[in-house]
Every structure is written in C-alpha cells, then in structure tokens.
Image (cartoon, rainbow, N blue to C red; front, side):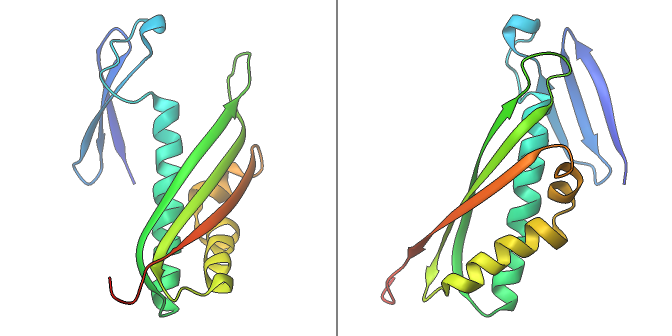
Length: 142
C-alpha cells in the first residue's frame, strides 16, 4: 500500500492514495491553514470509522441480517501537549434494518474491534477505544 502527500503551501497538503484517489488536507486557521479540507488527525479518525463500518456491515450481511444502514459517530480526545496524540476514542454505531438481532449487532461490532479492523487494532495499544450502539428497527413495510 502506498500514498503520496504533496505540499500545496502553508499547511495544506494534497494526498493521493495508491488507488488514485485524492483528498485535500489543511490545517486549522490558527495554525496557518485556510480550512480547505479535513485536518490530518481528522483523516485518521475517518479512516478508523470507515474501516470498522466496513467490517460491521460485512459481518452482519454474512450473518444474513437485513441491514439497510450503518453510521458510526466518533468522538475523540487528544492530549493537551505535544505530541497531541489521541487519548480516548469513542465510537457510537447506529445500525438500521429489519428484524436485526441484538446479539449479532453486538458480535459484529466486537469482532471488528477485536479481530478485523486494522485501524482499531493498531490504535488500541496506545488509545482507550470504547464503543456502544443503537439499533433502528425499520418496519417490514418500508
């Protein structure tokens, strides 16, 4: 896996993934940025969210759950002094579908956190990561 980061001036960077996708990252205005894109540390959280949501959806589909949506809302706390690493990350999953089984949703989230999500597993030794979830039951008619 490769990526390329190109400096665009001030504290703005163009990132290109090995698969050819690009995203602009920028620093906060108080750090010389112009707010043209997410901060690099926000990108780290977005990567974590994408990785774990990917797992949860696949696990639930393999478990023949009628899932129609999965959203993860992430809140993180950082150290106050440099390096301002993440000290706590909380993931709140909102899983929607029909006749979803509580134990399968919980199992999917735990399997992602403990076995499959590379990002979670990489971070868990240095950051306290917690999670919870809610299930939105969709009616059979929808």
